[in-house]
Length: 112
Picture 1 (cartoon, helix red, strand yellow):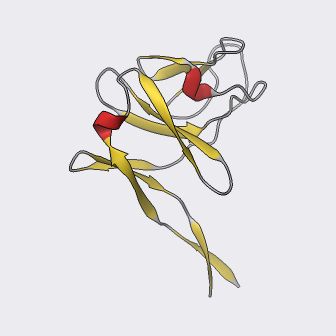
Picture 2 (picture 1 turned 90 degrees about the vertical axis):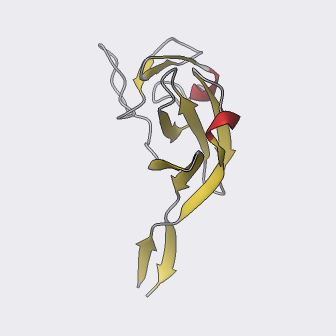
């Protein structure tokens, strides 16, 4: 039987992510967008808008939200949920900052 173990991966310093912008991290399963707000908060979502799969990392960050560059859907960075009348959700990836470095929790399957 397999179980899932958390695996915190260091993806670099906070300063490598532009304020009010994003950078991407590729994993074997998907691409992740890591966002930095004007207040230096860090959030991570799958880099795929729930509407038509637009690259959220290319959107404009305002407050704790990002606007998809394709159809202007507004996605909440804390929950991954579309706001307003739009419905859908981008997968959230757990993130933490320690000593100025950003870590993503990328679960790995472990044989038990």
